[in-house]
Amino acid sequence: MRAQKRLAWVFALALLGMALRGVGCALSRPSTGETGSHTATFVPPTPLGGSGDVHPVASATPLVQVTGDFDGNATPIGSTPDAGADEYSPTPPPSGDLVRPEDLVYQGAFRLPGGGERPQTFAYGGNAMTFNPDGDPAGPDDGFPGSLFVTGHDRLPYGELPAGSQVAEISIPAPVVSEDLADLPQAAFLQGFQNVAAGFFTELEEMPRIGMEVLDTPATGPKIHLAWGQHLQPDPPVASHAWFDLNLSAPAMQGTWFIGNQSLYSVNGYMFEIPAAWADEHADGRYLGTGRFRDGGWSGMGPALFAYRPWIDEAGTPAASGTHLAETVLLLYASSEDTPDIERCLDGYQHADEWEGGAWIATHTGQAAVLFAGTKGTGAKYWYGYVNPAGPEHPCVAGEFVGQFTVCRLANGSPCPAEDLSECAGHNGYRGWWGSRFDAQLILYDPADLARVAAGTIASWEPQPYAWLDVDETLFLNPAGLEEDMLGTGVQRRYKIGAVAYDRSNGHLYVLELFADQARPVVHVWEVR
Image (cartoon, rainbow, N blue to C red):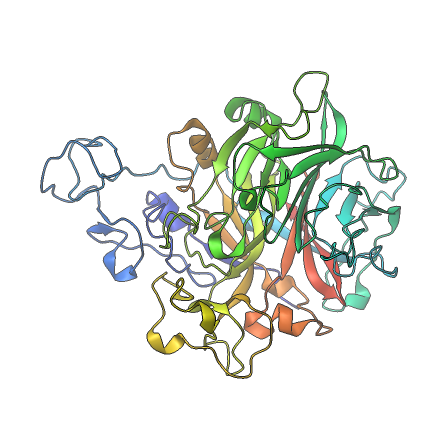
């Protein structure tokens, strides 16, 4: 029997004051099942080789009294000053009411409906997914109520498939734990594919990035909120957000809107509901969370998250098309567009990372977490270029870019040695960010940290995950062997998991595994207990 999940705990670090928070973001994560802490004079301990600031621990003997540090913080913080240019202020440990990795219990998986010609097929689809609590009211009483809205085959550029990325509604069968796809139940269509975005986002058909979220508020009633972008955003910029009705044959699309003046690379990849009480207290009643991660760090070097609200009054009147909606920044790391260094980033960050879905999850007893799902670069090196036929430990950089930017880095963020900076022979044509290893992961953030960002008491890049779950052992991992040049194989398999949906009432977390059932995704299910 395949192990349900592997845990990578960092609670030891958290309970010791989160010593690595915000300073050593290129550090490697603990290996599976490990916990770790380090006792040293400096934070982070210098043998780790992390990038970023290095501070004496609070117990170190002060060397000199200064009145301000290099980033403008007053000194001292506490009774004695730190040595060096940056005053150390211990970040509070995670709050006690947190979802822990063992609270996520794997329930199994199910298949999406098959058949159909593109674009009305789930093959090469699954870019976005959301849960509808009122869907499938006549369905069986099997403990998995509601329905899912899922996007089908993506739009394709240059007019090849302009009617792609259609949306369908499906039932949710009780999942089954099995290593054999044939054992899995199959969802049924409740509403067939409809081109709900016809006439919208017509400039965004090159590798679309899409998020959806069903949200029912007293002001608007039930709506499906939509985020839409593409791999290379156009210039001039195109608004990214909208909403439509749950009746897919009469979607009545409203929008489109910008999220403040944020980079479009940071806002249009995933969406989820923010609990109303939390949003009222910390985000000015903005109940929708939206964000995106774009490989190469263009969006910020880690997942991004903003709260927003697209209606303007208690009657649910949508904002005028083209409006730059007010937003609350909850999480935003430094962009590689703004710094050449790996700094102010997700701990363990690599340019080849992928974060494709998110959810604000909670247990039945009130523990909460903000979750992101994706395929994390975890190898010793990562590079812009190609897969090297000689093996995953050997980079194969795109030679034309050597000298233009740092095309290859070690896991700690430092540049690769000169011998790695050459384009190998015999590679395929799939150029992009690659790494020597990838793992499918769920990462958990403390909502209290995001509240501190919203309040302005910590910087948007300071929150770090308090726990990581490696879920590779639940996955099927492209058993048909499709598109292996694009996806990668073995430890270099990219694009493992994608969109996420969450049933808040029943604690069911739905995660798409891409290319699991031929070219169709499979839905994996966890229960948050």
